[in-house]
Length: 340
Image (cartoon, rainbow, N blue to C red; front, side, top):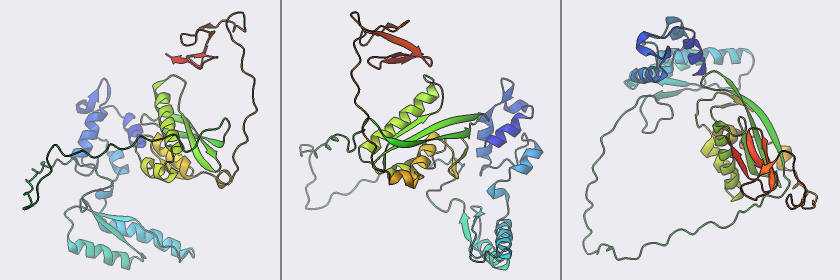
């Protein structure tokens, strides 16, 4: 968590968890995972003041989980919001007994809760939040007995046809689109604030283009953002429903932290998902943008034509139109670019 990092950096590193004069975060993360449930409560190298702040779900007794929910529920009821039922997960350890679950139910009734959700750690095969790394022995595949009276398919049998290649895009991008651009500031793992520009362009009320900018032109972080935006745009233009992209990208954790449109965001993919999920209604019902006005083709920049002052020769088209912009070389004729 960025706050945990910030607080730990205020203390000198422990000799056993030090690297180049700073905290060794790989060792710290490994120690937290080995604790069993991601707690720092029993890690002596973490200052006591920080341990008191970062109480994890399994550091709190299940009945105290219930009492927290009950306290907030009673506060809501006292303000006249009698129709509102609050809920929080009552986390139970893996070794919890039936009697402990029963005690949680009874405590919920006693404290005025209108509903309760209990979860025993590890009770499901697939768990959303987990920190313990468990290794399972690979199960040996048992040979399948051959069915009597049925001849097994031989290697000479014709293979199924290969899937057909996709055709052209369903939505062709016109020269002009209507859309919106939002600036979002997120906190990076090193505690620094980073600004992102996310643009969603629509055609007839449907998103067909996403542009994500997260740094200066030419740097690696912005290259990743641009690639992510292009891939999402291609998917939209080939008919992938925006809802499917939202389900795929939403909740991916990349170490970033912040809010966008009232939702918690933890990665660039998460940022794009929220942008697609919260398109303003005014844009959904807007008509398609009018085509851009026709422009006359630019005259050739060679052979006595227009020549840009201070420009170099483009290695792609040969025109003397290569200029440096925002740390990159860009050709004003063919669009060739090179950064670095």
